[in-house]
Length: 67
Image (tube, rainbow, N blue to C red; front, side, top):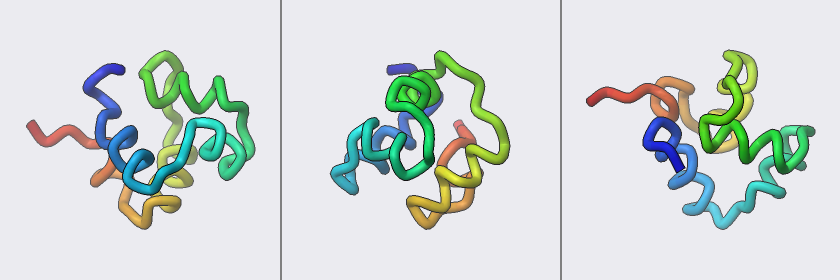
C-alpha cells in the first residue's frame, strides 16, 4: 500500500471494516474501493467526502498529508 492513503487504511482497520464492506457502504465494487485505497485509481472529491463521512472525519483529516 502506498503511503498516500495510509490514514484511510488505518481508519478502516480501526473499525474492523474490509474493502468489501467499504464497497458495499459506498455502492461501488470491492475492486474499485481497493484501487482507491492503494492509489491505483483517482479519488474524486465527492468520493473523498463520502468516505470521510463514514469515519466521521473531514476529508482533509483523512486524505491530506501534512508532512
